[in-house]
Every structure is written in structure tokens, then in C-alpha cells.
Length: 107
Ligand SMILES: [Zn+2]
Image (cartoon, rainbow, N blue to C red; front, side, top):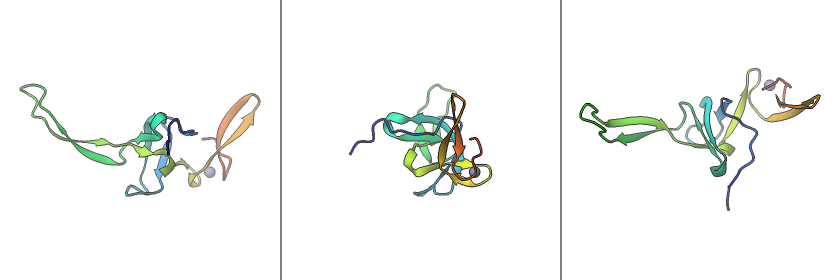
């Protein structure tokens, strides 16, 4: 089964909540979407420790924490009013606007 080029309504800077897995319930903004892999980097979510190599004599190297990607199917956009919700679209003239499916608020 391939998940190449997953269709998603999510965009960079969207506030999302993780809905399954060990990071369930955590919220953060999307930093980067890797559409071809069906996943995204979410700020402060799914942190993993990574060893850094020394780059210079002044650099001590060591362990840093970075965000590991979260699968797009494991996250939902967060509506200010309703919390985690599904995205819908609303037509306004020629423009397609993303809205909350529950309350219709623009997202
Ligand atoms: Zn809403």
C-alpha cells in the first residue's frame, strides 16, 4: 500500500491536534508538510532526541531534540470554537474558503 501524494486540506501554519498514537491530544502548528510521504512536522509534537556531531572546536555537540513527522491521517485541524474538527469548504464568489464543518467558522 502506498501513501504517495496524500490529499490533504491541511496547510502550513495550521493548528492541529494529534488524534491517535503516543502523541494523542497534543497540539501544535504545522511547520512543514511532506505531502509525498503523507506526513507533516508539527511544532513541539513527536519530539525525538538526536545526537549532533561536533562541527567545530567550540561546538560541544551533544543531544538535541527535534520534531519527527506525524502522519497526516493522525491529525485534525483545531477550530477555535469546537476544538479538533474536520475541514470543509465554502464557496464565496469564486473563492473556496476552508471552514469548520461543525460551526462554519473560517479556518
Ligand atoms: Zn468550529
